[in-house]
Image (tube, rainbow, N blue to C red):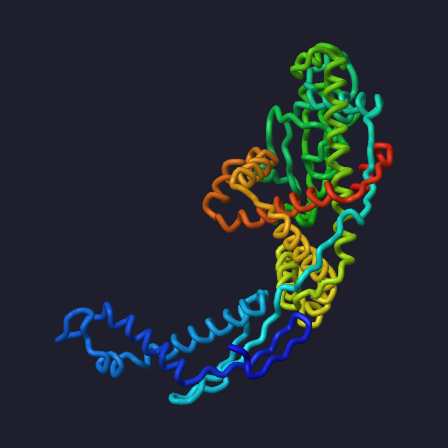
Length: 434
């Protein structure tokens, strides 16, 4: 059915329709007849209630449903004929409905814009290539050795220094009164770790085993225990022992401990890992470059989606800044700040979705499970909770699917664009990544 009025401006549609009374009555009768097939009524067998009885008792109950059905069918038929897809459900208004007269309604909506095919062969991006140097390989292995350090009690008579672990007894007091939780024996504290109140660890540097030290500190004003927040405190500290950090030597033994044949094999392995990381960084830079170029494409961006994205960004802002209260003026200003970014996000989303559809890019369940596994591996302590969360909230996988989809589309684009390699230092590559 063609609209009585049709106003189209870009991707915005404003339509008015008039459905003849005969079509309405036909649809209403069909719905009542379907209802009558299974309806039971006192004095009649199931499915044999006369239509006049059905109409007299239930007709009014079906009028609203008939109106909605006709509106939905009319809009669906219109969109199929025009080969358009509304961005969201149309805003519908019933303009006029009187029995035995035409049903009149209007609808407005935005459609998903038509995106022209992109000739990827005309897009050129730079691929930065970095090779791992001996210095970087040796530094990486040194860091590995550092990570496998142990602490051993020192036998020589020397002063404590940053990085040592001291075994201490301590008793804390405020105004001469000991406070709960301010006392411990044989507590291992790494000097310089920042584990204790600011200033505490510094006052234990340059001391000897067996020393008694008065440590004067002031609790931060935002300290977790209200009774101690902002208060000056004295800690009586006894240094029982000093343990120095022992880092394993960079040699064949370190390599075999790391399941490599020897030090040369370890260096070869580290070189491979470093260059894989450089490759990943270079690829991410290429993806950013491609996204910047796609953002320049001319696309009619649906205002509806932009507003939704702005609201989503506002929700993220509120979650990240719970203490920041915005009045109406400040909130509108913040939304204006987000709008440009929202337009870019929506445009890129539409373009990538269009490319993915045209290239028939699919995501299978194994890829989703692998992505969830990778996320769980990033947070080993919460791995079980992560698995349970995605198991109980299937909708949460939509975000993961979106990330996989975008990555697959961008990888496909990279395979089609022109690339020009440029050799750079690893430090330059990683700096540009940040």
